[in-house]
Length: 270
Image (cartoon, rainbow, N blue to C red):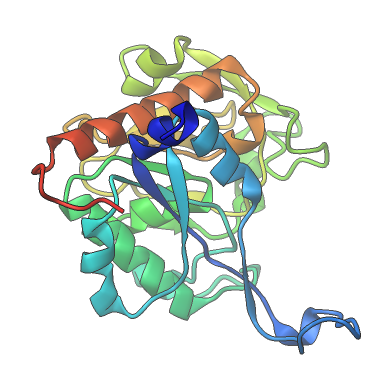
């Protein structure tokens, strides 16, 4: 076994959810390709960020709910990725007129796997929509149309849908200095990117807000009773070249490695 193979053999297996659908009718076919069909989409940046910090990522497609348990038996951590708006039926509300495209069937799977991983106390890193899904799993609600709340801030508010490329921060967030997030990234203020239409409204149980934008929008949450459960509203995977985001992913992968090591020696992880 070469050194690279040996290193990868010890990497924790981390599942990354995917919730974005590219529908067949929107896909342009080419003569050499397959007939258009519904496809799942996930940015490679999530996988590269996990791989770069020592983890072995695996993409989780929507599965039958009875397969969630056997799947989680093989994983050491879960990353809840970004994607489209969550349908408000998931938290008992009627749709706002400004609600974006939704995929309720995929919502149900992602919420189910997030809930199952949460009940197992697995290390979890939630990003953008993933943070919103985590909040809903914990019984919280969402702001369905964030622009409607811009009047909370003075002036033009915070650009939560930036036009600059994702590798560039568009605003800063203030981080609670006594939080796991602050301890992990080593600062109480950081520049972030922003590509979200919805945001956390009522907090889910045991979730603590640990970062806010200048307009008051919750930008990060954590459960301080857990070894590692952090949700960030920004796309940290697109900022992986920055030391703060490297530290965030590194801490998540380290927690997953500890989870893997704590399991019984005879248990198969992958």
